[in-house]
Amino acid sequence: MLSEMKKHAERCADMIRRTSEALVVSHIDADGLTSAAIIATALEDAGIEYSTIFEKQLGKDELSEIAD
Image 1 (cartoon, rainbow, N blue to C red):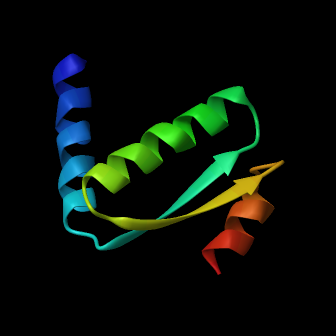
Image 2: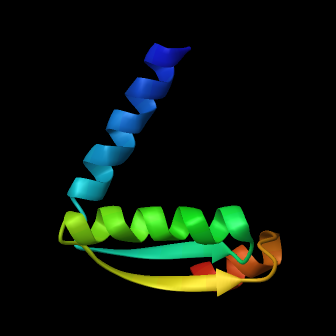
Image 3: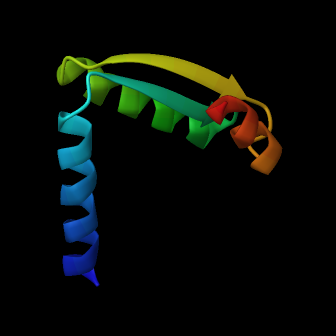
């Protein structure tokens, strides 16, 4: 199981390294805000520009609207 997680993490990291900008979408609660801060710090360290959107709800409708 750990080897599968590592494989997926490496794939995600490779995709992130190939991008020049990112959109961070976060739920407005303690773990969502903390996660967004960690991701923002990692993106800054990597020199990747990013925007952040905070949502009270992150359901299918909200995610569809953000994707458009």
